[in-house]
Length: 307
Image (cartoon, rainbow, N blue to C red; front, side, top):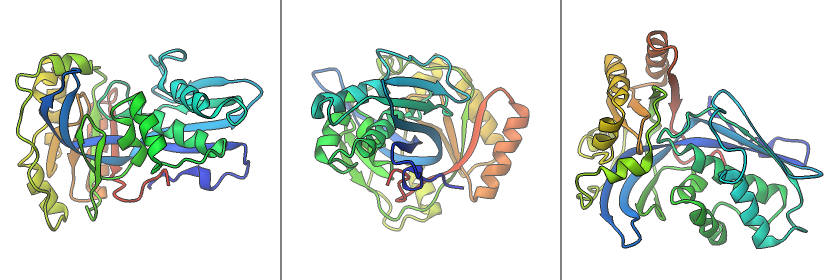
């Protein structure tokens, strides 16, 4: 079942809830490095039916809480992206238009796992507060995209939450139309991988870009195309976190059509022929590895849950 954005369903106009889908990098090519030390890349990003949820409600004073099964180890103050998103909007529009708010993050995605969880949560916070405060912005507004980029390179693509080709440091976004639904299994052993260390250990930073996308992108064509691509961050991530190989081995036992690590790790994904196959594979891995994060999902394609 694909989760929907409850902002369309809530009866209390003082509360807005927005789903924050996991971002999966099907391919990630590191193509260069700028003078400011930001790496340039080309990536195909899809968004999955697995994710977190951000709820915002008008309140007498600002409040913030984190709930959910993966709420440990997240900062509740200061460096938290949700609070930075709130403060950024308030600085732009002023306290009159942006009164006190209670924000709740329901955390399901693993932390520091390469699925864009923090960026997705920040994007969901921006969207929830824009609706709650009735600000003249939506996810396509250049002003909101600019603010999102100032919070992090991945946040504009999480704001869009649809199948994308991203370039530059992540700010160049092109929507990919007509890609099929991709049944997925996401696997994370719980080992955290520091993104900065992965980039620091890259052997080459001027790798070839992605090739042309398939003209008729059915499931077989997408899988064939992905076989020609890479995740340039996978080798250094595997050197830093050997359990990534264990996650890939568990996926391989289930005979996916394709598998790879996403982002800077350590989450891995497998693409399966059907949602039923994905559910069966996830159940089998969960029996063997009950302490891991294992989740069957499906890509959201053009149906952004934040619309």
